[in-house]
Image 1 (cartoon, rainbow, N blue to C red):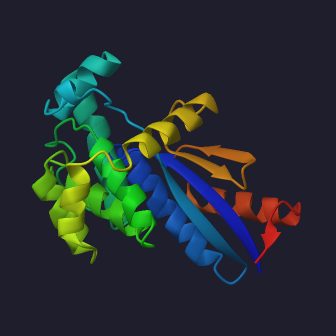
Image 2 (cartoon, rainbow, N blue to C red; image 1 turned 90 degrees about the horizontal axis):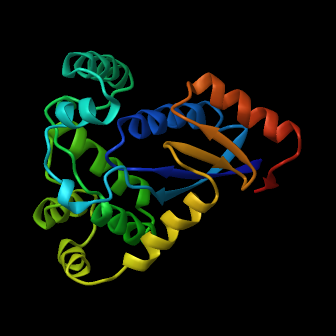
Length: 219
């Protein structure tokens, strides 16, 4: 069996990143008898300025894209339908507020060392899109850490320290310098880039083509 390495550059506050990973999960499930997958998450911030925290999302998106709030609401509704079809909780998608995600990315790095980076990322996605949780609030973050079975007190100590700060900054800089300017971005075997939340069938075909070309390592 061959192993496919997938580096995912994404932001916790990016709905297409949550949708893209749910589609990737479907693709990986369908290919589980043909290949194995090594997934690593990497940081990207859509809202890197902590001072921009807490603005109603439709207002923020309308200003960012120069479109009416009604247009943005329609786009968000379409996104909610896609998410629902994938079993994702996006019930607060249109009620959420802009959030800085730096501390969330720090926790994903920490959770990775305990084999739970994907669980941490998914918990953050669900809290933000499903609950409009204030994912800049240490109490919220500790609750999410505990929900995936990790040590809440250790997480609380991490959040008041500078642990993983430089790691996240270096991670962001690396992928920006590599040319990643929008997310989600999936880098396959350090060589191939798949941009956006592609359908499972598209991902399956891409992985099979890469394997057929011999661009993977045996497990």
